[in-house]
Length: 241
Image 1 (tube, rainbow, N blue to C red):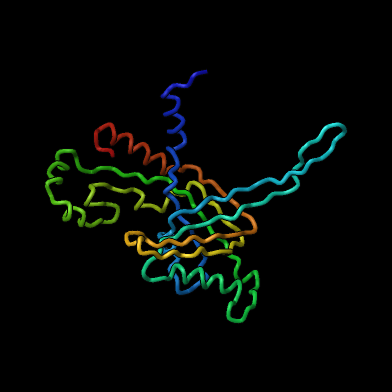
Image 2 (tube, rainbow, N blue to C red):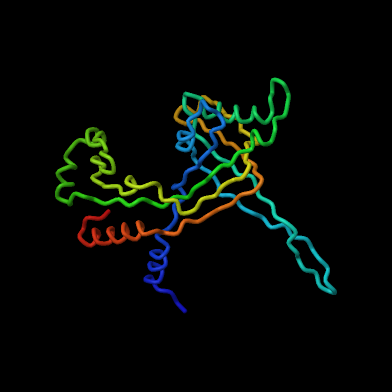
């Protein structure tokens, strides 16, 4: 049976749009009291959602061989962080690793002291609505960009873009959340310094291992339906994005 464009649009609409790989957040443990965990999330450039591999073994049954599952394994994941002139990102992971192995005393710490949960959340794109019509936008475009870009935001109202962001009125819309159970950093990559990197931001990659992971999905709620309906109405009147 051939599918039409309307079928594809309907499927995407029923699924509340496509998921975006750049809409995510990570929640790291407050293992170092000197570090701002919220800023660590903002500086996280990329991360992977974990995978689970089923382990199989061959079993002879009569004249045939069948693959039987005898367990599972999870692969390590990595996160890449942008660094600031204040090196607290590296200090955070150096401190965490020092709780695993004390390089001054050459002692290994207790598992319960350094294994912590990490949460990775996939977010849904927020709704934005234009509250000004096209004619006012034409007048607004005459303002120099260096002044227009400095216009402040008043709560959910962005004066620089003329948009009302309903996501500012509520918490982040989490559609999928994964928790790494008893995770800890196994390696922090070397940071390369070079004369050729004058215009590059320093980055560091951290690999994590963990005991297991669990996930939960968040079904769209009534707020999603209301905002989606409002977006459609405004779009018909030429006031949407």
